[in-house]
Amino acid sequence: MSDMAIRVRSAPTLGARRTPGSLGDKLFAALCTVAGLFVLLTLGGIIVTLFLGGLPAFLHFGLDFLVSTRWDPVEGREEFGAFISVFGTVVTSILAIIFAVPVAFGIAYFLTELAPLWVRRPLGIAVELLAAVPSIIYGMWGLFVLVPFVQMHIQLRFGEALGEIPYVGFLFASNSFAGTSIFSASLVLAIMILPFIAATMRDVFEQVPAVYKESAYGLGATRWEVMTGVVIPYTRVSLVGGIMLGLGRALGETMAVTFVIGNANRMPSSIFDPSTTIASVIAMEFPESLAGSLQQSALFAIGFLLFVISFLVLATSRWLLRPRLK
Amino acid sequence: MSTTAPTFAFTRSAAEERTKRSLGRRRGIVDRVVTLFCLLATAVGLFFLGAILFTLLRRGLVALDLTIFTAEFAPTRYGDDSLPKGGLLHAITGSLIQVAIATAIGTPIGLFVGTYLAEYSQRTALGNAVRFVSDILLSAPSILIGLFIYQIVVLPMGGFSGIAGALALAVIVVPVVVRTTEDMLQLIPNTLREAVIALGAPKWKMIVLVCYKAALSGIVTGVLLAIARIAGETAPLLLTSFGNNVVSTDLSRPMASLPISIYQQANSGFPDLIEIAWTGALLVTAGVLVINILARVLLRKRI
Image 1: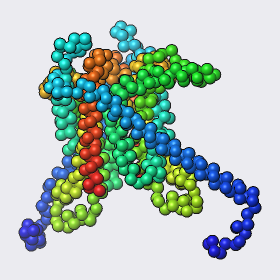
Image 2 (image 1 turned 180 degrees about the vertical axis):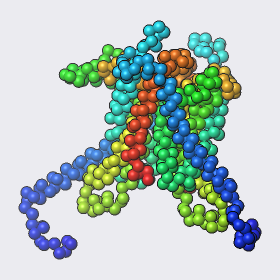
Image 3 (image 1 turned 90 degrees about the vertical axis):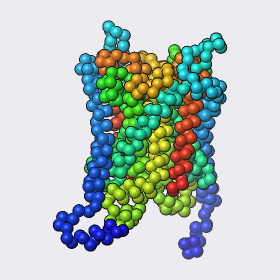
Image 4 (image 1 turned 120 degrees about the horizontal axis):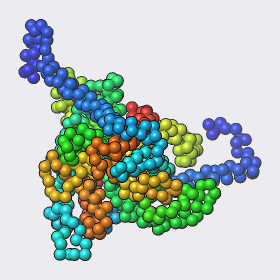
């Protein structure tokens, strides 16, 4: 207080008036801005290092790298192609989305419209805890619980029942009975991304102004009619954004998938065949690869491809969700 | 409306009346079927949470005893009970060290970025870019962060190291702290800021002494969530701190961590090592869930 009183009194005599703390202000603003720039620099650094790391492989194999299905790290006859792992990544993620979205929608709808108020909070916390479980736990649980279950109860039955269907039957008929397969990986991924999608959808549904829903109820609509007639049209874009966010998570998931996909560098013909994803190949082979080898460069190259794919998906998701965020 | 309605509204033919009823019944049935489906979906979600926790407890408690906390890794004693039982001391130490350093590095950076977004960069292009990139980093595949740190830290240092692991985790901490800090600072009413400025305080004092104080529980929540997130991270550590079988506090050498130990022992194929891996999994999950619940309790008090 006394400090301020002095300043007020002496202000007219000073020429260029210096407020106390202007230096501190400048320093603090600079500090915050530099921190902000640091974030930009990190993303730039990730792009550049991945690209530079993968450059030798890109140069060595050319465009063939993208379409080749060969992956042979044995010394002397090294040959690397990205197609199998890119294919595995995309297929497992899309299957996971197909499994997870209906369930996530059900949970979000239940949490926002149907459940009695007293269960909403504990249920919401339970869903968020499911999201907090580390991915390696999902992987272990998948390997020791889910994979045997798929092997014993799902694979054979579905294989026999659906394998005979003309044209699409081959998708379900597999010669591999280990249980580690694209199907198992998609299932584990679906369980993992379920809480993310459900939480985003719940937030999105809660954005719908109550007046709109009340008007529809006032006209005699049932709860489901309010959902399809008011809530979904109002939130359509953000819903797709939420699903894309889940897809982005699934694309880059490493540990959960590595445990259950079988890590076979073979082109799968059935959803019960083992395969691999970009993240699993990197996790399996990178720690053992030699620094500067062609194999390591190829791993950087597929890492770069994974970055490009997930960046596109995440950027789209954020763009679609922006009305919700702002 | 209904009092002035003409009477013909009530003179429907019997056929019309039947159609109306059956339509109404169908709408009701659809509504109930969907409700049932949603109940089922929620049950499925809860079932998986329950199944995972149940498996963790059932298989994790088997090997849980004091040796877990006092012994380092020991090779399998399959079929020979006279050999010493292994533990997870090396992994717990390594995880604590790396998580602590990562939090210590990542939190201030995240805090300043969040401050920049909330207090300095309203509607500027740079601010929007930083916010966008931070959100991308929040969901970016963590293994790619491992590759990044491998290139800029592991290769120049000439080998895997604990500090590389901690730096990779720090990169993951930053966006989590940024998001919660920005959100919490934006919840503070502007009248509070105006009151501080009107007293003659410089902006940085307003932020540090008033805004941070008002948003403290929210910021702490963000830090706790970030710790919970990195405590279970495995993929980036595989490429940076790699893992170690003995207790090591040397940051320039490979360092063990709980997730990596779980990964290696779960894939070893020996039943006794897999038991220890389950115990490790139980410890990690219990820690992560407790931190999460703590964070939520903190946040609830504020709102």
